[in-house]
Length: 114
Length: 112
Figure 1: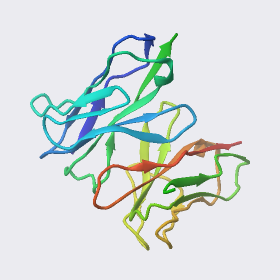
Figure 2 (figure 1 turned 180 degrees about the vertical axis):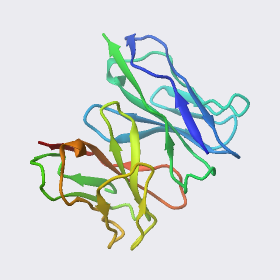
Figure 3 (figure 1 turned 120 degrees about the vertical axis):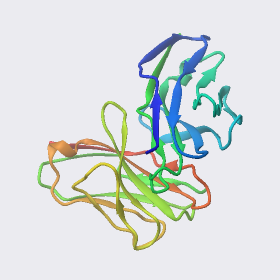
Figure 4 (figure 1 turned 120 degrees about the horizontal axis):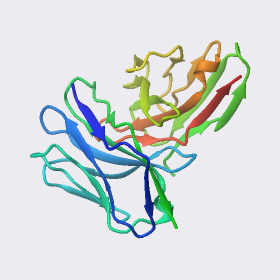
């Protein structure tokens, strides 16, 4: 069945550092891919998405490119801020028996220090 | 403003009590979901619904039950709460024609 594997945390960075959170997937066909963010004490928010190969999703300075050849959707940001401290989830919507539900990775906690 | 709401946000109760966690959305979405989020942050789908009068069990077995009598409302009930039910519960909804889910703020449940 479909699955998502994302980089384990926690990840601790200094302000203005470069961020990469790795996400790879296993799926049949061409799934849609998502990054969600969860700030402390809140629910998940959609950060960005990509629906076909080579699409780049972007939002709030974050970017991720849908790479079919490497089955990856890594999240990047050039200069993180303290306010980016949160948990980040990679997710896919595919056709591999998930009954039309999203498949989430286990989450990566990011802490940004001033 | 279209949104998804959960009440209460925090609940502390004693063992054996019956509780209902409320979830409502004003976006007209057909599909709704309940997730349990463990302290390690991982999300587990426990229930979902395709629409009115539809309820399905998710990937993680749960002692909770759900109902879907109205499109906008998807409450979750625990008949007899136990300390093992202590967790964060997240409700979400999605439009059948789109794939992303929209999440409520969550209910943090503590059973003593």
